[in-house]
Length: 214
Image (cartoon, rainbow, N blue to C red; front, side, top):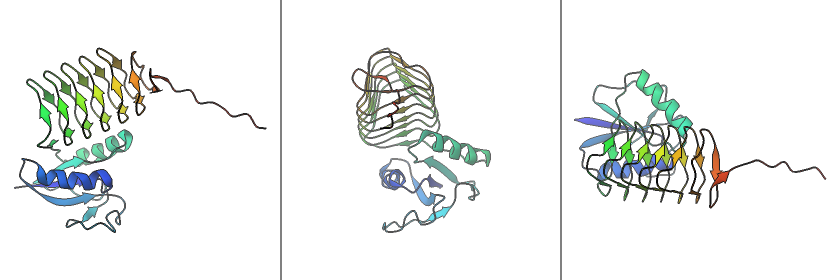
C-alpha cells in the first residue's frame, strides 16, 4: 500500500485531497506538509498537517504530490524532498482526457476536466489546473504551472518554470521561453523571450511605469 503526502495545505492542497480520493490510483492519504502548522484550522479535514517542508522524513511507502501554485516555491520544496529520498507520483484526475502517445513526467498534475492532445509532452512537475487544454504536439517544460481555463494550442513550446494565468491562450506554434509569465486572459500571438512577463490581447511585455511625484 502506498501513502500519499500532499505538499501544501492551502486551497490547492485541500482540493488535491478530494481529487486524490477520486482518482483511479489506490492509496491512503497520510496528510499534508506545510510550514504553517495551523494551515487547516477552520477546515473539517480528517488528515493532519504532518510537519513542515524540511521536517518530514520520507517513509518507504510514501508518495508525494506538490499542490503549490507558485513555481519558485514549488520547485524549492520539491527539490528538498527529493534530496531526502522522497518519491513523487503523478496525479491524474479521472475526468482528465489524455490522447495517444502522450509523455507525462514525474509528479505531473492534471486537474479535473483537463485535456492533453496526442503526441504532447509534459515535463516533470508540470501542473495543469481545471478545464485547461494542451493540444497535439505541444511541449510544456518541467516546473511549469498552467492555471484554470488555459488554452495551449497545437505545436506550442512552453519552456521550464513558466506561469500561465487563467484564461490565457497561446496560439499555434508559439514558443515561450523559460521563466516567462503569461498574464491572465492574455492572447499570445508572438514568441515570448525567457523571463519576460506579458499581458493583454495581443500580449505585450509588461513595463513598470513610474508615477511622478506631484
